[in-house]
Length: 270
Ligand SMILES: O=C(O)CNC(=O)[C@H](CS)NC(=O)CCC(=O)C(=O)O
Image (cartoon, rainbow, N blue to C red; front, side):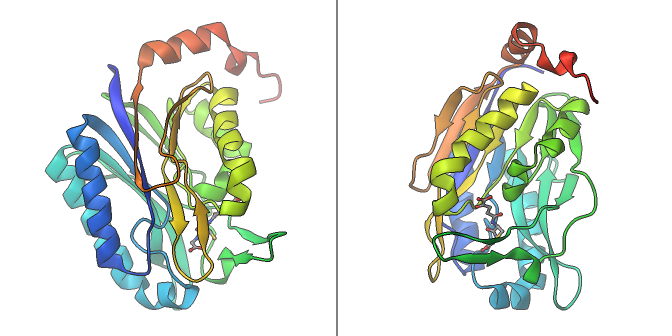
């Protein structure tokens, strides 16, 4: 593993699959031109719309999203994470699925979001993800890449469950993916802190692609796609407009922080 550049893409996805894939392609190309070898797309990158529409189109979204990710990874010779899209399980339910593709266009990891966002927010908005999504039953996978280090996957609301990241770090993860569509309301107070906390407590990099802005109806997301280093320093932040956060993933920095702050070795209870 040598130092390399990673990119966390930030989008305003809408209820239009083709439009979103065009926007995603533009940002992937931009990241590649800036030298990124590892690229993450946010949760709902290919479709963000009502529950009914999502269920209706799930088969098409799943098929086209997967094909898109493989085509892009191969065309640009990068490792690419699609941060979450619906894959049908039954007539009424999908898995919120994140897919990691290597530069040959091959699927190397698949994760079905475990923690579902069933929350009544104090601002009056209600999110009940389990209406349409079936919870994944497996711990998130890791992918050990010779060039990029060991990559661990999670999605959005998962960031509030530290045990997932401790599991990943015990599997020797170097870089967490935390693709998200955080609400504007929770994001302003929690997003950055949570991403930094997961990075610091596990001495891992975090690549956190995000949704931003107004999507449909009242749906508004927080933005601030970011890359955080294992000390918790924010290396890049995409702000609140669509764009790309790019930063270096450096194995020497990983080794240095883990030497300076050996908390993973000081665990007592697991
Ligand atoms: O609703 C959609 O369109 C698609 N689904 C999502 O965007 C998901 C599930 S509702 N959002 C989150 O997990 C937000 C978590 C969050 O904001 C927090 O933990 O505070």
